[in-house]
Amino acid sequence: MPHEVILEACVDSIEGALAAEAGGADRIELCAALSEGGLTPSAGTIAVARQRVAIAAHVMIRPRGGDFLYTDAEFASMQRDVEMAKRLGAVGVVLGLLLPDGSIDLARTRQLTEQARPMSVTFHRAFDMTADPKKALTDLIALGVDRVLTSGQAPTAVEGIDLLAKLVKQAGDKIAVMPGGGIDETSLTKILEATGAGEVHVTGTREVDSGMTFRNPRLYMGRAPDRTEFATDVTDSERIRKMVELAQGSRHPGTS
Image (cartoon, rainbow, N blue to C red):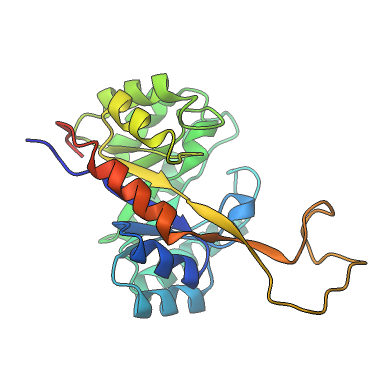
C-alpha cells in the first residue's frame, strides 16, 4: 500500500516551530543556530515550543559547530541534553558522533540511543562525513537508530540523489533514510520520486528585516561582517505548506 510522506521542518526558534505547524509539517527538528548547521536549543525554547506546538518535536543534541569528534566533556554535556529533552517532552532527539577515521562512534552512539529511549533517535548529517556510507548505515541499523538524515554525502540532496536512492534500498524497512540538505519546492518531488524515501527534511525560510529603528553600523555581534545583524531567516509557513502539498502528491509504495 502507498504510504504518506512525512515532512519534517527544521526550525531554530519558537516562532519557526509555530510557522512549521501552521504550514502543515508533520514534525519539527528543533535547533538553535541554523547558521552553524543546528545546535542544541535552550531548555526554555524546548519547553515553550512543547507548550505551544502540538506536532512532534525532535530536539538537536549538538554542543558546538564544526566536526563531530567530541571530547569527554562535550559528550557529558550531550548526555545531560538528552535527559533535558526527555524531561521537557520531546518525542525524539537528533545526534551524530564520529571517530577520527570517519566511522560511526559506536560506543557513544549506543550510549546516547539507549539513554534516549523511549524517544525516537535520528542520526543527523554527521553521516555525510563518514568515510564509508554503506558500512555507516549498516552500523546504525545494528545500533537500533530509527532514522538517518543525509544529503547523500553531497552539498545538497539533489546532488546526492544517486547515493540516497542506494541508501533507501539498502535500508529497506530496518531504518528510515530521510533526505535533507537544500531541499526546496523545485527539488522535493524529484528527490522523493527518485529515491522512494518515506520522510523528507526541509527548512523553508525567508529573510525578515529587524524591527529595530536605531542601528549601530560600526560593529557586529557575531555574524560575519558581510551579513547584517538586522535581518533574520525565519520559517515561512507558506513555503512549508507548498512543500507539504508536493510531498503529499508524491505518494509511493514505501516502507518508512
